[in-house]
Length: 238
Image (tube, rainbow, N blue to C red; front, top):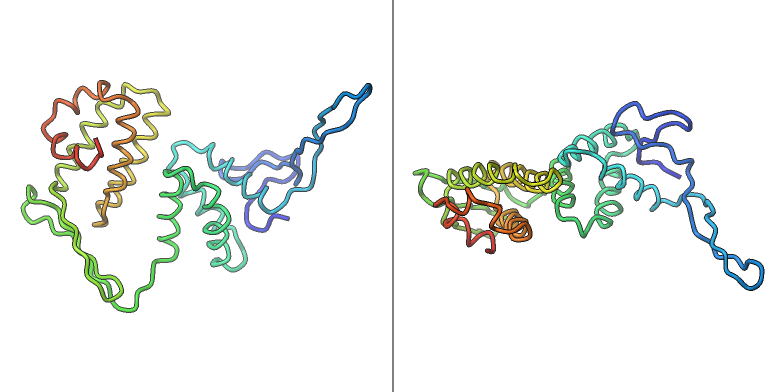
């Protein structure tokens, strides 16, 4: 039985794009039967949906949303409609839904960011988090104090260079197919939000580098001829 997700009533079309279409609380299952003359017959039966089946329907509907960053609105919609303990809903997403998306870095990044916004991490002492740019051409530095320890990371690029890099990259991806453009834009938008928060974006840059490599560097004419590409290139893993 479903307690967490908003599903349309039977025979009715969803009122908005975030409501899951009714599937009768049943899911198909193939069963093997012995037919005549020793032949095996495979038939499709329908069995009552289990909790995991509802999670899978939730994920399947999530994947239909475009652009992918509508995931934030989708999660907010079901979160706000949940009438019981909100922390219980967050645990459902964290421990039931998120593991089923472990092979999709884009969705796991977005859902983890959403969870972080809903339940900020607690520390035993106040956290000082600053991003120092100083001269815009100076390296960006991230400083964070967590659980009695200080950690400083320095990167040999500036916020302005990252913005230039994204701008040039976007001028090249317009020539790619729509699905591939969406992959790039999702990573760029997520990295931009993280950068604006003063967070480390090395994992996002690595992911963008993988997308560039998989597409083929020859497609990125403007990027390859730019000076900023040589600065950012080591962080892309290229």
